[in-house]
Length: 297
Image (cartoon, rainbow, N blue to C red; front, side):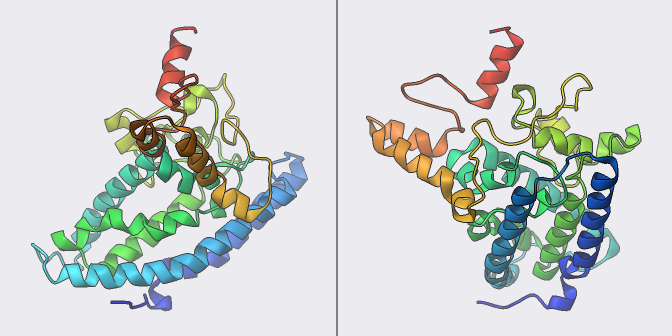
């Protein structure tokens, strides 16, 4: 069941030199213009999280490829490797990523795995490397429908890599706005700054991978406002550079909340309800906070 993706066919491997070049350029501009986009210890912890995630993902990607290959035998259609298959898989993969990403913000146990990507209080290209460790163990489940439809498993993993590469460059403050037509269709640095912001107006918005159209369609889009600069981090910052605390702090919080919950129903809510729900405290869920903000409360 376990097989590995050929290294030479993984687009991420070929993109690594470009990642390093772009970080170097951003660091140079940051130094030249004294922008204070980087905090040294935070950047190093982001890189450390990325390396840990990479090690886990090597194993899980092989397991995913094996599973997809088995399921592919029972496919409904033969889509193949035609040029139009790449157009189809772009939309299929990006749609799947949107829902995986959105639910990672709206289901607390999934948020516990995803939150470390948002725990940096700065946004730069090093932040893009601040990838989850826990997420790697289950994220490929979301794509399990695609080989059954007829998408080739190897093509699927290549498309996921292309998506990851695209999402790298949107983690920057150096690029302000792109042409309106591009901002309307695609995820951009402006849209993604909103996603990484802890401002109430911006919480749980803009979950796009490549295409921002899903957020526009499903009501999770918010533009970056000129009069409200994004404040990066999470609503309760963890203030640590310890990789294990970064990766696991929310799991610990979930455990404590479940333990103190008075009923079994409340225990389940602490696991599956959105972050911010409490049985005995104020409702701090993102939708509730935005509703109160609009109401002037």
